[in-house]
Amino acid sequence: MPVTLSHPTGLLQQPDYAPVALGVGTRLLLLAGQAAVTPEGEVTSTDLAGQVHSAMHHVAVGVTSAGGEVGDVARLTIYVVGWSPSMAEELLEGTARAQQSDGFTTPLPPITVIGVQALWTPALLVEIEATAVLD
Image 1 (spheres, rainbow, N blue to C red):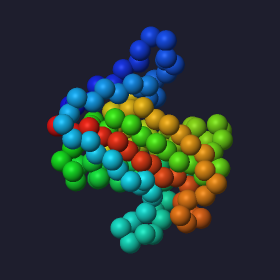
Image 2: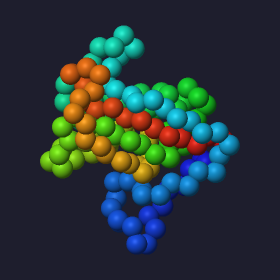
Image 3: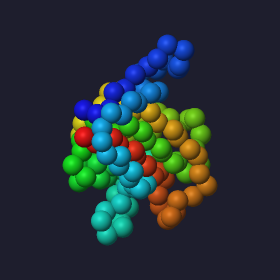
């Protein structure tokens, strides 16, 4: 795989995601924000964990459609409506489901969670952007 994840000494040591991803591939994939919607735009889940899982699945579809694998994902940016730290458990439940169903790495690549006021439709709770490095 063209992405190596690490936990350097001096940075936060936690098991959920790696703070550093080193990409050594030849192509950079920038995936637009993915949400918990069907191809027709219907929302697939009403809870945060379900929406995170669905959005992560769409990230996997986007990466594999470009010839990559989910292990090539070097960074995730997660936008959450009304984010508060009390939502972390549900968010991590959704990412854990994606690790099981779609093969995302454990730990996950670097993640940034950003609280937002709203997304493009009121039913959406989360949107996930991804950057991947492909061979």
